[in-house]
Length: 465
Image (cartoon, rainbow, N blue to C red; front, side, top):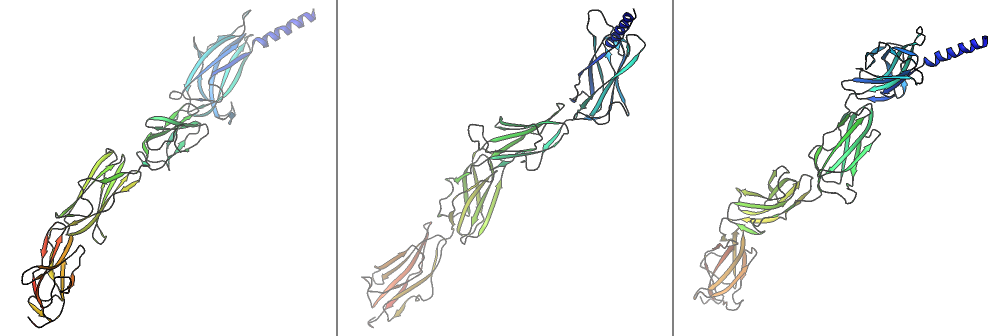
């Protein structure tokens, strides 16, 4: 009899302890999780299970900090801030929930949500469940602790030193991208680059990487050179907050040199112009034109005019540029043209020359030339002249018989020769002891001519005249 009573009491105690247990499952958030709440409103979803238990109250608190699986300030001590009291479908959860055992059933369960404001930060969250066991006279509490990180802050990201400015045009085959990042709950970062709007390289890192160099740009099949490139960088944190840099545009890898040549309206080299201006017109082929520089030099190679014309790079690929150098003096000039693109590539025309000449030639007798109507006892005639002409073509020395005017000798030079010495009798037809006439004629490249006066000289070696 005593044994039976003891056995019955043991069974009763076992039932009380067995059926008084509470199972508390946190469905959301998970331990060591990151939460991106709406205005920091965090929803706690839990399931309470038990048998022969009445739940009086479930309350959530946050206390201390939590980081990477470590409860830094404990779980229940210190200053506790109440978050909320759970609620089920029937209303406030601080009313009783009867989880009494029913024959043939497992533990009874009830799932509820609790939504409350939780500040941004790393927190230790713990809940206290107050319950009464099946006998109705023993109240108890159970603590359930977990860590969460509430992160509603968008990561901070922006381009940093070494990254080209927007709308930059460069002459190279690589693009360096560098960013500055502020984010303590980093998850991943992605660098994306596109050619003419089509992404051909997107590199992702799960460790914080702030720069990358896209070198030897390739789409995996061909080597990419000239083109319009765009790029940006995207960062995501552990809570799912995302931020992206601006997309920088028109990073053009320009390795093509401009083409520039003289337009047919530009005079050929060596031309002579009798107008007081020099027209220079060129044809250009360049998609990213930056500027054009016109150079004008005098006969001694001194730079007398340098004109730079700048424009934006939205100009069409083939176009014409013109300059007219005015208010210039007579003389020989040299000119050329250099074109630059936005990447610093340049090309130049050949150097041409042009002579500006508005005056006819000037030719006059100079020292050692005998005056008119002179007599000498000698065998030669010396002629010397002074010439002023910027577009010299030729000079001609002529000598005639004074009696019948027949030509004895005519000598022409295409370089400026200003003196000559005739010896009558050589060449043939010339005679000594005779009266001679002579003059000098100068022509320029525009066909204008000028002649000295005709002078008379008599050579008498025999004393007969």
